[in-house]
Length: 100
Image (cartoon, rainbow, N blue to C red):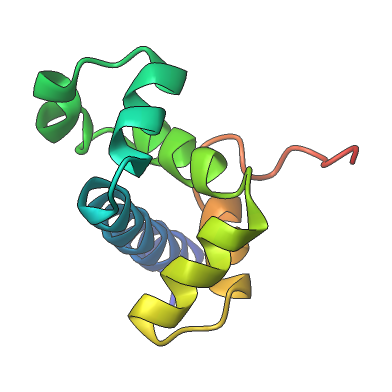
């Protein structure tokens, strides 16, 4: 597999996880309101923004703010919690150092 193909696959997988996170946020009582308020994004614009990798990175950043949210998402999806951080690394800005 060529490097660009591998990168495209990784981006696609990261976007898929981020879309699943967005669905989780939208379906979790009160969490969508917290997301909309924290991001300043209109709820009406979320479907359009969901096509933007930078927005999807912000969705993952939001979920990663709270370990409980990450764990709840991972349980609901039947995946390891680390998958969320791995997906974040595959989206724009994910290669930036984490200073915390």
